Each structure stands twice: as structure tokens, then as C-alpha cells.
Length: 175
Image (cartoon, rainbow, N blue to C red):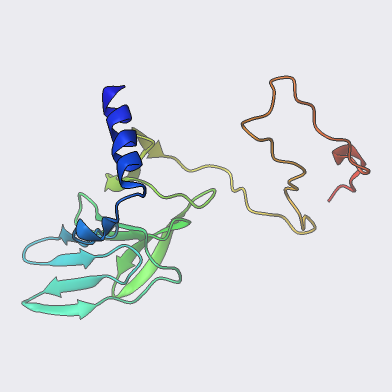
């Protein structure tokens, strides 16, 4: 409590908030480059949202880009390079990206690894294994899979009821 009060008094004496210009700090980056070691002397340089660069035999070479910017890249325990754009995991094969897994919905993982053919990810501070499953792709004829009718505020009372709409969800035509 005393620290909070002292801060308020300090602002009150000066009459205005201090400018942050006097306390400049180095710019921070959330997209730091990472070096991904390969087999032997090969390696890859990965910067999220940008293309990957390969280092092999003492020279650098820009790898072909994905359709969408990569969000994550990793090397498997077998030495293969993978990249994920959040919706698909691709494997580099002879200077071309081959899709090897499609995710049910776009996801950004903390980290991804491949070991003995299985993908392992960290999500929400937990380690999870990706397993093949049924596709959740949109089917023909379903033009609107989800309709947002109302968003409830966190300030709403626990007994809040939704407002009446002229056409409720059960009255909507099925697609």
C-alpha cells in the first residue's frame, strides 16, 4: 500500500506524469532468429514470419518460401527440416516444401518437435502429441459455419439472459 500511495503523491506533486523519453531502452523483438543445427556442418537460420536460410558447405542459400509466412521451424531427430505456417506442417525435401500434416485449425505452438514420425508440441505450457484425426474441413453448401449473435461482457450479472432476436438460431435455415 505504501508504495502505491507514494507513487500517487509523486504524480500529484509534479502535476503530470513523467515522460518516458528520458528512460529509453533498447528495442525488443518478439521474432528473434534461431539457429537450427542439421547433420554435419549444415544448419538453418529461422526468423518467424520470414523465409529460412540454409548454411551448407560454407555458403548460405535462401530456401523457397511457404505459401504463408512460417511461424515455427524445427529439425527432427532424424535431421529433417520442418516448418509450420500455423495451419500446415511442411517438410523440406529436395529444395521444395512438402505438406506432411494439416492442423484442424490454425494454431501457434510454443515449440514443435518430430521424433520417430510423431509430432510433439507445447501448447499452454503442456507437452502434447499430435495424432491423425478426422478432417474438419468445411463442406460444400455450408457457407456460414458460425454466426456470432451476441458477445457477453465480463461485467454482466451472473443471471444475464440474451436479448430476444427477431430470428433465433433455431429459425435459421440449415446449411
